[in-house]
Image (cartoon, rainbow, N blue to C red; front, side):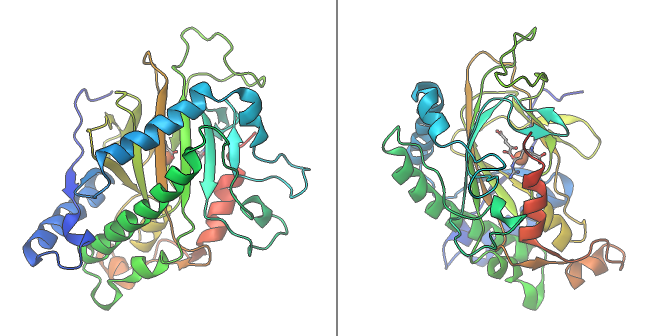
Length: 335
Ligand SMILES: N=C(N)NCCCC[C@H](N)C(=O)O
Ligand SMILES: O=C(O)CCC(=O)C(=O)O
Ligand SMILES: [Fe+2]
């Protein structure tokens, strides 16, 4: 069953973006944040200081890339296949149906960017994420604008995780998420979704046959995902605690935020990394640009004492290095 109206909370982060946010506005933010993260794991963020024109520019550059850049040029920045010089790589362009979720092809094309990293181990399996981003040549202003966008989104991400530490009332550990994300191994995806054809007409060019999911059900891997998307409705769907799917339709100017696997682990499951999916059966080509604000590659993430106490006293998760979790997840993302 799919709810017809959106019921995700709206949270104003402005008091945590500035150094001098008032006690009352911070308290209001953390109280809403704490129920949003416990009850849904998804919310709309306002007061984030990213201007509407920035959001518009980012989306329109992404749209231009998907709809106007010739295929030959897209393929120049294809992610590397196994057997290429550096083994297979996750950075770069992925054509329709190249991504898989739960064993099925996703009907989207995308370009994945990560923090540039020349110091990772180059041996398997880590060569997957080693190296530098592959930037499209056209539109020519895309690279500069998206690099600037990454810097702005890191500030938003930092404010959100600072507020999360406060919302969990972690005492002397209150800065634990800010510290763990100081050298964030961030990810940004530029995603293009053609409408799912009905009935199927063989849109996938690579021989893969599944055509009923734009992006299959999954959780995100790190701390917090900050998503901007065009105004397409009924595409992104969020699984509520009772199992129903809620449309996370865009609200103009707001960023859709969800928590990832590392937050679930830190909080010992008090906050769940919420499942979501994209099923785009609309008319128009849909574009989204999620920014994943993640821990440092080497951050080791384990349940926090305070959260263990609050969830019955037993640690439900072991410790993990974020880079290892990410590598394992990303490895399963491609055919
Ligand atoms: N970094 C993130 N979350 N990327 C989105 C991944 C889409 C789902 C993925 N194929 C999976 O199966 O996890
Ligand atoms: O396109 C969207 O709205 C969501 C994409 C997503 O869930 C992801 O890339 O992890
Ligand atoms: Fe996701």
